[in-house]
Length: 287
Image (tube, rainbow, N blue to C red; front, top):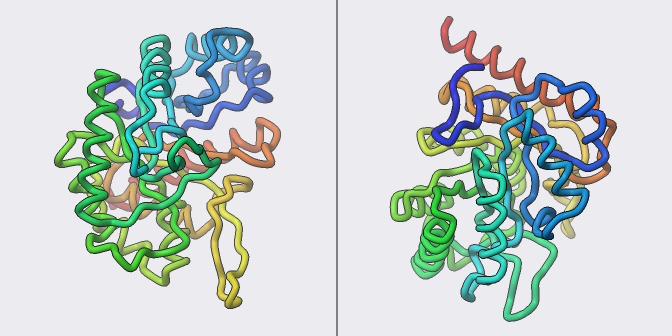
């Protein structure tokens, strides 16, 4: 193990924890760096999910990843949701907590999606206020994840990188770098993913995400990548990840696989590939 984040997450590869894998994990206790769960799946008071997660936490560090705060929404944060998140953080004391730069609510309606925000001064201030509220309520620093995007807003007047950096500077939050999101967005908007990661403030990165994406076409017949989380990490994303590690050094790296869940050995193998990619990148940096 080569170091930990400030809160104790090892600079190793981890995997998203799925209920169908827990028995296999607890019976074999594989050499996994950490596990990550979606916070919203554990907001009930008890039952088998909590018993299983408690058993996992006896052996592995935990990263808690939120998908329902709707930090970018043009409405106040849902205080009931935020308080449930506070209880969950206090119950498990995860090594890391993160959320998305996205919105998923409008009025009283909650959408089952993570939608992009325009990068404007008004949106920037609103998100900073929301991040401040989250960190004050939880009593801890959070990470904010860069999005995967499929459209660009004409009203955006700030680049995505400058937007993320300004949020971190104003609020003191960290950043979660999703390398697959970078590749998906850059491909969809015909920009350079290499330029994006080269300019990313890696000193603010507390965790990295990797996932698979699907390829389809838009209404005009042009290629369109979808952040699908339903297959192995693409070769081009592995290459981009090694570029990041060559600059940043080892970082806690999560393999996300949320749809069409494979057998545990398949997911575990992806984490092994991440460990190998880190080592290759560091050998090249040292050469």
